[in-house]
Amino acid sequence: MVKDAVKKENKAVIHTIIENPETLRKDILKSAIDAAKIIKSYNDYFKIRDLKLKNINKLHSVLKEIKSLEKHLMETDLPQLSESEEHPKPKVNEKPIMPKSNTLQEKKVKVQQNSKTEVERLKDELDNIERQLKDL
Image (cartoon, rainbow, N blue to C red):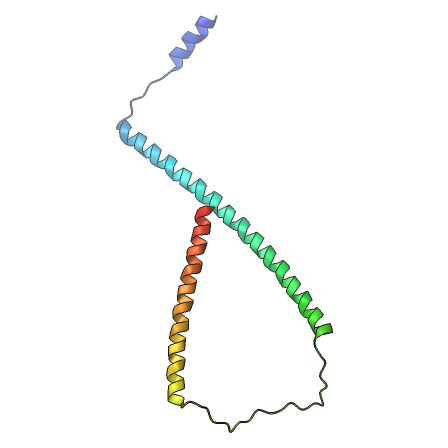
């Protein structure tokens, strides 16, 4: 009986001719590689999403702590001023020590320096984030 079952299975096998089997194999391999990349990016997406949620929860807890500390500071540690007390008024007629042209030029130079340092700082921050993503 076992021989009869094997003979029936052999009769059921059908062979087909595949045109360009090499290109078909290449296409199947490329599809498998693409599927693996998609799965990897999908997993990376969920890792980043989880990290984002953790950071958001951490931020919420820090903000709650800041609010409670601010409330505590306002209630206890700051001195109370009465509304009747007069605050000294700043003098309006004071002249600047340096001429205006120099201060404007210095401000422009400072703004340029700050923008350069800010851009550099942002680039460094971006590099750090990219390194962290590669480590994930």
